[in-house]
Image 1 (tube, rainbow, N blue to C red):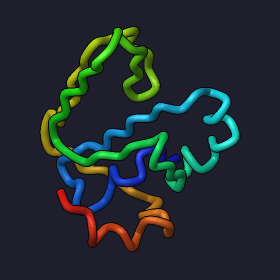
Image 2 (image 1 turned 135 degrees about the vertical axis):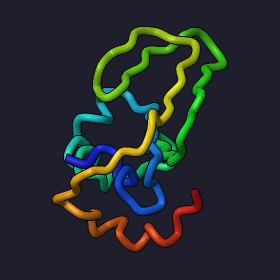
Image 3 (image 1 turned 90 degrees about the horizontal axis):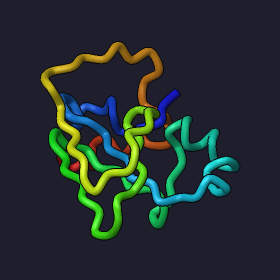
Image 4 (image 1 turned 60 degrees about the vertical axis):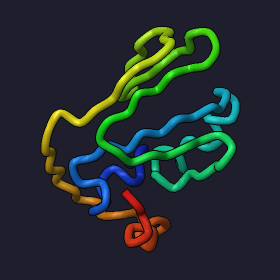
Amino acid sequence: MRLFPFARTAASADRVNLRVATMAPWRFVPNVLGIFGGTYRSPDLAFDFVGDDFLVEFLEDPKPVQHSGDALGRRRQFRLSVAGHVRFADLLGLPATIAHLEDHLDC
């Protein structure tokens, strides 16, 4: 399973892949294989970022937030950061659809 396709690239060492999605459940369901396979791209509905510290603030009312699949409730803002060096055992390698992008990530 590779929900966050850039999480294990060389450019993201000691960083986290943050995906912000604005899609409704009816759009998620037919794309679930591509989303969890790490190949789903939709420039209008899913936004990927790689970094070591994120502060996400919503401009309007509090929004429902998930972290690693767990519901955190409605929040006006939340912070994600890397606690330290993490090394993954990657048995899958990069998906072929993004392997060519690794050299172009600007982090």
